[in-house]
Length: 149
Ligand SMILES: [Zn+2]
Image 1 (cartoon, rainbow, N blue to C red):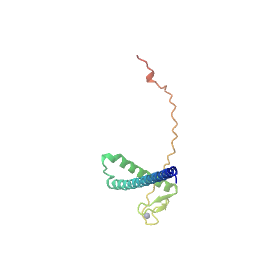
Image 2: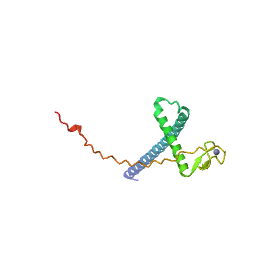
Image 3: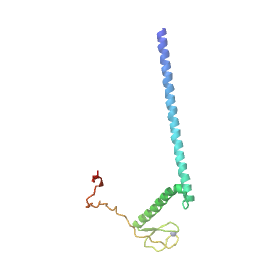
Image 4: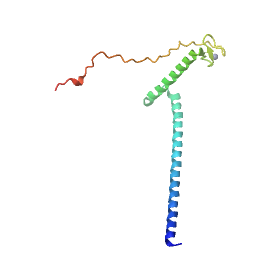
């Protein structure tokens, strides 16, 4: 083999080596990124558990720092429970407060446990009040127009 060919051969081998090294590095970075995402996912799930624990334990006396968040969760829980009751009412059912059985609205007592059924208020489906913007008849007094200079 001539020196030239030998050199070319060496160069190709070197290039091949560095390409496979690069590929390996890219692969390692991808693996690490995947592990990071997985760890972040795990943190997120554990935060949820912590948040749920905090909510269940301190919802009646939360720190001021998280008061808004705790109240937002409570509001959502209440809203969900109200909407579920409305769905049952629409279906003509009422949930037994004692055993959770869904009983026909016309019944006075739970067919499963005999507890007196608490009849819900007739469902108030809020028709998306079409907010027709009241035609502002009042001429908008543009303050910026007043030139007093
Ligand atoms: Zn019942």
